[in-house]
Each structure stands twice: as structure tokens, then as C-alpha cells.
Amino acid sequence: GENVEQHPSTLSVQEGDSAVIKCTYSDSASNYFPWYKQELGKRPQLIIDIRSNVGEKKDQRIAVTLNKTAKHFSLHITETQPEDSAVYFCAALTTGNQFYFGTGTSLTVIP
Amino acid sequence: DAEITQSPRHKITETGRQVTLACHQTWNHNNMFWYRQDLGHGLRLIHYSYGVQDTNKGEVSDGYSVSRSNTEDLPLTLESAASSQTSVYFCASGVTGGSQYFGPGTRLTVL
View 1 (cartoon, each protein chain N blue to C red):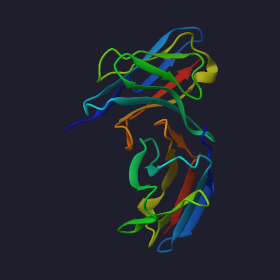
View 2 (view 1 turned 90 degrees about the vertical axis):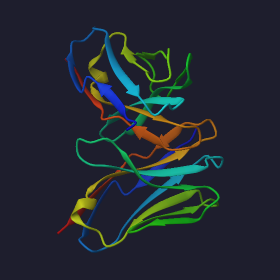
View 3 (view 1 turned 90 degrees about the horizontal axis):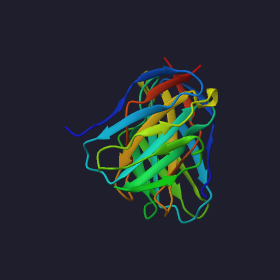
View 4 (view 1 turned 180 degrees about the vertical axis):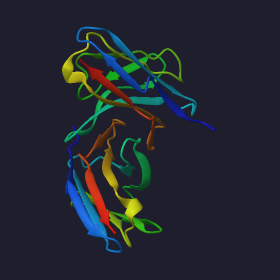
């Protein structure tokens, strides 16, 4: 089956700096990669996603990049704000229509 | 507005009791999923369904069962609750090839 690894597990940045979270996957047939943000005590919520036929996607301060050859994808948050503090999860969708999740990155933005 | 709900939101039970967690979605999604979330493990798939009368085992299905009698509901049953099943449980729904939308979660404590 698919195996998704996510790094780092914790990340602290100063407000205004950039944050980068990386994930690798093992199944080359995986074709859809969403990112979720989970605030304390809340449900995971989709913030951005990318499909395997695209290399990069941006939405305001958030971007995701995908390297299919190396089987890794990354979340980039620029100009971080305190409200970006949360746990972020990456996921990969296999051809069996199952999602495999990374173990999460706890991001703290220090004002 | 379409939504996905879970009940109860909090449950305390005793070892050996049968427990059922409800999940109801009004998105009209064919696919529904149950995950458990534990520190250090991220989101792990318990069971999933691609449609009425269809159910499949996920990564951590032992001790759990589901049934799908209509599109909207996928109840999760713990046949004989164990302390190891203390966790936060999330239900999710989605369409094939697309992202998932999560319910608010159920915090289950087994004493």
C-alpha cells in the first residue's frame, strides 16, 4: 500500500517568515494530493490540493509543489501570520480511491 | 447548506460495551470513510464505503464494523470497546478522485 511520510513534525517560525512542509509518497500511481489544516479541537479542513498532471498551484499565501519523479510534494506558506498556527496534514490518493495521510506538522507562528 | 455531522460529540463508555458512532452527510457523496486520530499517528483509516451495501476494511479495522444502508449514513460500531480504542473519531465523505470533507469528530473514552 501507500506510505506517506511528512517532515518536520514541529515547526516554529517568526511572523512574516515562510514555512515549508514536505511529504514523500511511495506509490507512483497516486494522483491527487490534498493538504489539510486542523486547528486545535476542530476538524481537518482542506486548504489546497494538487493533481499529478500539475507541478505547482498557488492560492494567495499558500502554494503546493509536486515532483512526481522524486515522489514528493511540499506546502509553502509565505508571510506567515499567527492564525496560520495549526497542525497541517498532507495526503495522497491512491488508484484504489483511498487516502493515506502523513502524521502531521504542528506549525507555530511566533508574533 | 450541505454538511456532515457526527453524534455523539463526546462519549464515555466502559470496557466490553458495544458503542455506535453516527455519521450523516447531506452532500449526496457516494464515498464515506471513518478515521481515528491519535497523537503521533495522524489519521488512520478504519473502514470505508463506496456506496450503499458496500463496505471495506481499512488499515486499523479490527474491533470495528460498519454498515451502509443508504447514501447519507455510515454508522461505526465498536463491538466490544477496549481502552486502546480511546481516540478521536472522524467521519468523512467525498466523491471518487476528489477531496474529502470531514465531520466535527467524536471524542470517545473507554474506561
